[in-house]
Image 1: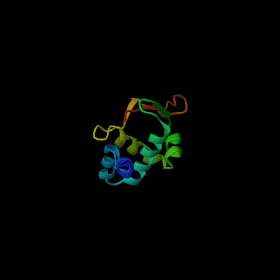
Image 2 (image 1 turned 135 degrees about the vertical axis):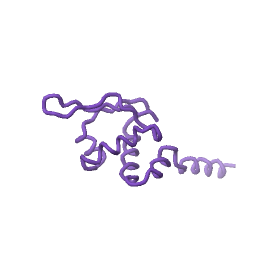
Image 3 (image 1 turned 90 degrees about the vertical axis):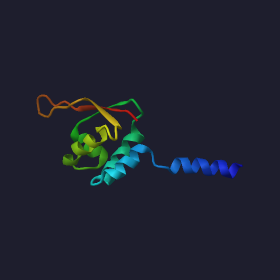
Length: 105
């Protein structure tokens, strides 16, 4: 019936995907990590590259600059596997190079 079809679609949309479930099980920074992942998911398509410096990541995720690197490390870890680091960035005034990430899922 139509009601059953609508209910199945609603249930499908409300179910956590495996990335969100792994983030919630990760522990300490689950709230900030989940917020950052949802923003990435909304702004970037699968297989799209993301080029941002730590300051840009901090502004994008509304985080402090010191919390950015550990959160990105969790998202690139093979347990979650949401992002892949293509190029590691370098800090410095002469060679400031942003890190490049690719969204996998």
